[in-house]
Length: 197
Image (cartoon, rainbow, N blue to C red):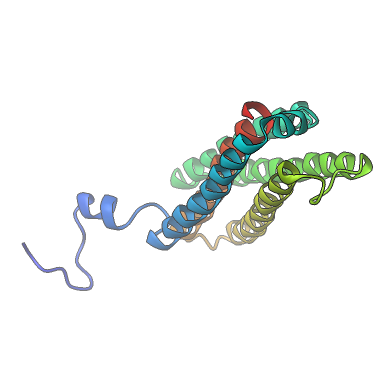
C-alpha cells in the first residue's frame, strides 16, 4: 500500500473513513456527547425502576405539547441546516443565508419554548430538588439547552463569515454536525422524559 505524504489526493474511500464531513474532531465531540447523554438516560431508566409510580406521576406533569412543538422546531431547523449546506455546495449564497437564518430562528424558538416550560415548572414549585425524576429532567434538558445555545453561537459566526464571503466548507460542515447533534440528543430526550416512563 502506498504511503501517503502531504499534498497527496486521498482516494474517496480514505476520505469517507478518515475525513468525515466537518473533520474527525467534531465527530469525536459528537460521539462523546452522545455517550454522555446516553449514560444520563440509562441512569434515569434504572432509577425509574426503583420508584415507577413517582417517575410516572412526575412525567405526567410535563408539558407534552411544548415538548412535541420543540421536537418539530428542532427537526425543521435541522432540515434548514441541511439546505444551507446544499446551497453552499451549489454556490447559491443567497439561498444558503436564507436557510441559515431559518436554522437560527428555529434554535431561538426552541429556547423560547424551553424557557416557557421552565417558567411553568418553577411557578408550580418544581425544581431540581423536587424529586429524582425532576433532578434528571432539569439536568438533562438544561445540559441540552446549553448545547443549543453553543450551537447558535457557532451558527452566528458561520452566518457572519458567509455574509462576508469567508466560506470554509469544512467549518460549515462541522457547525452543521454540531447542530444535528443537538437534534439527535433531543430526539433521545423527548421520548424518554415525556413519553416512556
